Image 1 (tube, rainbow, N blue to C red):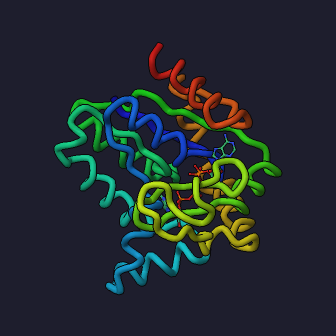
Image 2 (cartoon, rainbow, N blue to C red; image 1 turned 180 degrees about the horizontal axis):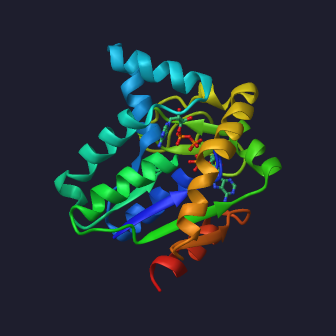
Length: 214
Ligand code: ADP
Ligand code: ADP
């Protein structure tokens, strides 16, 4: 089963993908997490990726498509995969669908999470990130057991550089311009399920399960 979790920055894609992954027993793949890991390396690719991410711009399609294709052929994806943050452009969807069609596979579900702008800003402003475990928390909505520390690894939690208000504004613009058109593409063939993301984490999750387990 291949599931795409879709929506603007801060909507809850990573949070819900992690829960779904644990429940369905298939991996969740966040392109953002993958790029953050690559950025830490001081390689030419790492530096290139950093320049896009720090500015809140999209990493070029060829880089992303190659990364996702190499992830999807790993043995742990044999029963499926949850895609968090991909595809984010119409060009990415087309490459993905071509890749899947060539293997007699398809995207089974596209879950669009919907949250208003004011709430997205609050979620991003309070988001805390554990760079090693890649777990996400929120100062108020999903606090760690010990303030400032990851529940799993105990590592220090950070605010992501691209969650600064000026970068966030730009990321919303990029979403509207480059990513929103992907929704029209999915909406056209009835695979898109819109979920109210304004509810609390467990309520949103329950609504997603109703779609993927129907
Ligand atoms: P968020 O979940 O807040 O939307 P992500 O962690 O998914 O953020 O992504 C962070 C950054 O990683 C993006 O702003 C972009 O620079 C890069 N990125 C992630 N996924 C993609 C993608 N599919 N295409 C291009 N760039 C991407
Ligand atoms: P995305 O991957 O779409 O950028 P995240 O899953 O990282 O979004 O969530 C953004 C922030 O909002 C995180 O701090 C997370 O803990 C918090 N969050 C996620 N879902 C909810 C929700 N339903 N209600 C309140 N806060 C949420």
